[in-house]
Image (cartoon, rainbow over all chains, first blue to last red; front, side):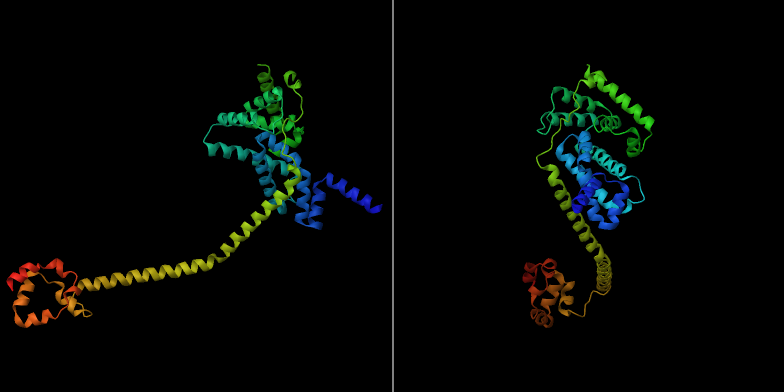
Length: 193
Length: 136
């Protein structure tokens, strides 16, 4: 019974992975074990964070793996740095933005052309199950400038606090609130057209 | 947020079946590959000093060989009569008239007739055999 309770407590702790616990894990169980717990805890929220920016599943998978590899490489230097949550979301966001920039450069197309390509892929994507309204919403999101798009996605879908977003994106809360406000306004306009 | 509120907030995106379950294993494989690649690069970089030393020796040898080759060529140009191949040197500046003079002088004829003409490649360019035959 005691071991069962211990297991449950351990599971509960693992589900609430915090920075102090992670540092303890790295010290006690080693980098591999700590990293495995990070991946188990963050893979789903980070996947959806990236997917809402990139849209395509395969590309999201690549970007997510790259983000975790960066985290793996930087884990040794993590201890004295920012919060794990902020650090991982920042890596994932930067990787997603870099991916879009690289894709645009590779295809030699403008931002608008890239968004149109993403949209046409989305319409035929077997991993997109949205109805007409949801597709329209995604189209509206794609019309937004890159920064507004990321801010809107993080707030509207991921329900992150402005204070958390400010840490991740290294911007002031005021600027983020203004960005979100503009994004919502543009989306409303697009949807009521 | 009128129009936006009318749209259900449910997630319209899907993932392939078993994606999240397999993700950890796929990631571990990629990290393993990256580590191996890093080790391979490290091994190559470990050999770098030796490769550099070998390349330096090769460079020094090449420069030395080149300088020696140039020096020998210059020496030959300055002193065309070579002591190594007197037979070739004898015929080196030979032309049609010289051959006529040579073969019409009995003493020299015998000396020249003992020569293997095939061994003198430039000779055919320098002389006209038909003129020589007429002169004889």
